Length: 77
Length: 146
Figure 1: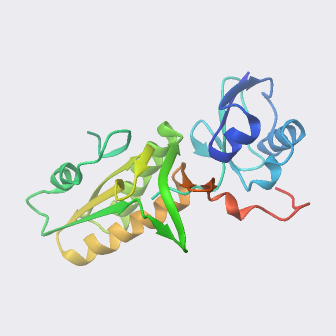
Figure 2 (figure 1 turned 180 degrees about the vertical axis):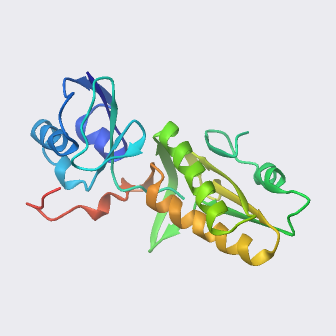
């Protein structure tokens, strides 16, 4: 299983901050497609994906037990 | 305290300046970022900050390493507060020490620019008539692909 995290506007869009999904073996690109299917509009949020707290590339593959986070454009400072 | 941390309590900037001060440092720059009441004519009542805390602290530490590489001899400490912040509260503190002042000034500005690029922290502005997560304005046009 993969643990998914949603923050800020994406937490409000999805209505959850965290969930589990059976996405091991999928790429980050496929994860985005899955999310866009489940939460229409998320694909327009310009979100980056982090795996295990590091920014990931579209071709990176999720492994069982990974934490994947949707990171909308940041606005700290 | 940690050299790179996300906190929920009010920030005392002096402890970060003290942390980076060393005998070989001839300069310490201390930047504090505050909650601003007026932005482009719109009055903010207060801000709510949210973070992906473990990743945010890793990214703050990464910025510290980048500073040490770019300005040899410089050392940084950075803290960002999350939760509800009122007008004039300190949201972020950046302390940089270096042997000479130029590096301390430059590295300090570099740190705030990098925070705004890579550190997973989000700000929601709460106004009299609404609220919005800042950063979410950059939505792609309808039909755009991610």
